[in-house]
Image (cartoon, rainbow, N blue to C red; front, side, top):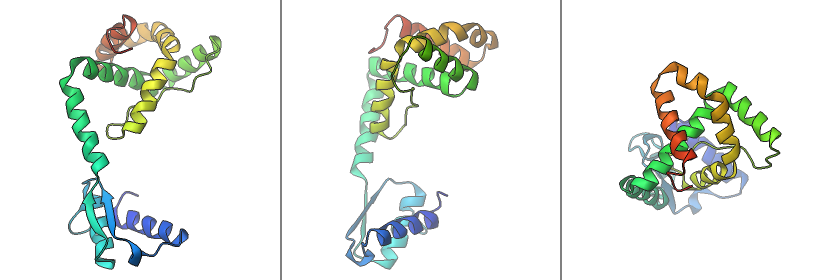
Length: 177
């Protein structure tokens, strides 16, 4: 569960298992989600009521990530590259049929790389692995697209149109890759 009470219980349980006493805590650092930083029932408020010296501070890593995201949105090459990667991963990951095709293609071309990962909107460490997975799986993604494009184009939905544009960009290297 993602409720503040559940997260608070989990944090306290982990601290207990690690022999860390709440009375020794001097800080808490989370994003500004209401379940974490809510002023009435958030995790920070709950722990602060139990230990007044465990002051809450907004997570600077999260704040930095939000600033980087805004900067990337203003650079059309980076923005388009990330949009293309997001469309490509959704195309594979949101369809069991296409994911099966992708896995078979990887086996056929003896590609030893790990699978592809969805981009995480607020976690740059996951984004780095997602970007690397696209680069390492380029040939398999291209072949999966070729085998799937008739089915994708047939539907005429926004995902099919986005997918077509993304794969054309990817195929012609109109992105960072």
